[in-house]
Length: 125
Image (cartoon, rainbow, N blue to C red; front, top):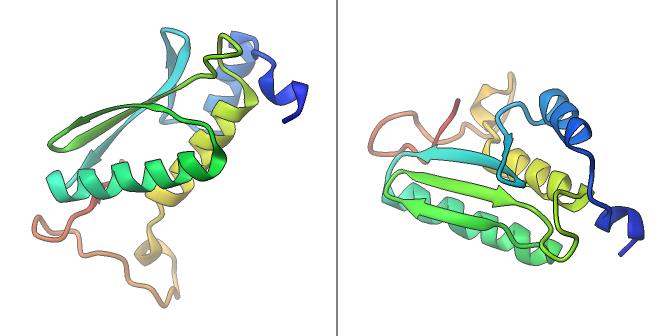
C-alpha cells in the first residue's frame, strides 16, 4: 500500500470529490456516508453481501448499519485517522456495482430486475 493511499485527505478535497464523482455520498463525523434504500429484507441482505464481498477483496472494511429496507454505509480509514483515497475508491466501487441499472442502458441485453414490489432489489435514487 502506498503512503498516498493512507494519507488523510483535506475535508475540502473530499467534499469536492464527492460532489464531482459520488453526489449521493456525504461527509459527517469523520466518514463518508451513503444510505441505500432496498426493496425489503431480501434486497438488504443482497446489498450487504455485495458490500461485504467488495470490502473483503479490497481489504478495506466499512461500517454498516442494516435495517429492513436500508443499508447505511460509513467509510473512513481508522488507522490513518480520517478519510483517505482508499475510502473514496471503495465508495466508487460500491456505487458502481450496487447502483448499476442494466435495463436503463439503451440496447442492453440484460434487462435488470422488474421495478415491482415483488422483485425490487435496490430502490434507485
